[in-house]
Length: 283
Image 1 (cartoon, one colour):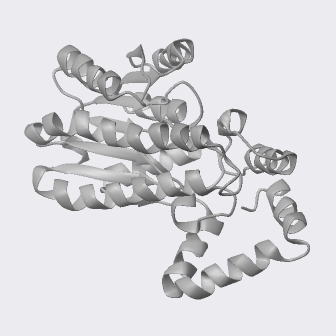
Image 2: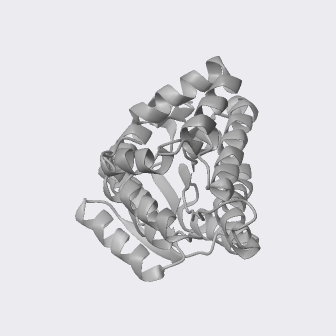
Image 3: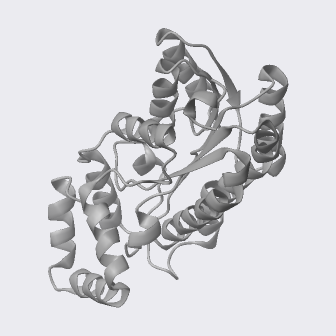
């Protein structure tokens, strides 16, 4: 089965803003009906209005992806309404910044429940019926953080590594059923993730803001790259230069890569250098 066989229906979590909204618009332009799911129902409705202006149709649904029952209800609703779901984008996520030992445990729990369990629930709820139909595609939003492992981002790094691992596993499991898998691994893009992130000291907040506000790649560009990957049934989307080459270097020599990263981070002017690159959109 290929892209042409995918039913033109898509459900996207975290669709109320940022990358989720951009994916909704990109798929709408391709003729997909869009189920826009978000914990903020009003923002999901705004996305559906954008979808309608693009010439397609959609429905906004409130969904907290931290809840197994809520995600299963989301799947039941759209399968009942549409009869089939062609694309599921498990995109909802949050982030927490700080050193291990400083980040409060409730922040760890929030990140893991939203950004990892939310993806697991989405796959668990939608996949059995997609497999039975013999066509479809799963899009999981991970991050370059899942393989770059930037310091002071442990909860985020861990959940995104988990999403990459889950996606690689699914790629093997789903091949016989005609269901494709794509995992997104961007670095920093212009979303509202910085506004919902928690930090443990002011400098982290300044860096996070600089990273997102000066990002060169837009959510729309990542969404377009994702659609191309779905059409070609490609597993990975790593749209930016720095993480793409970082990933390659790490695969060549993981020990040297981590040692070099540690040396740069702990250098006397390490934080100044990080801010220099962040303000120029080079990370």
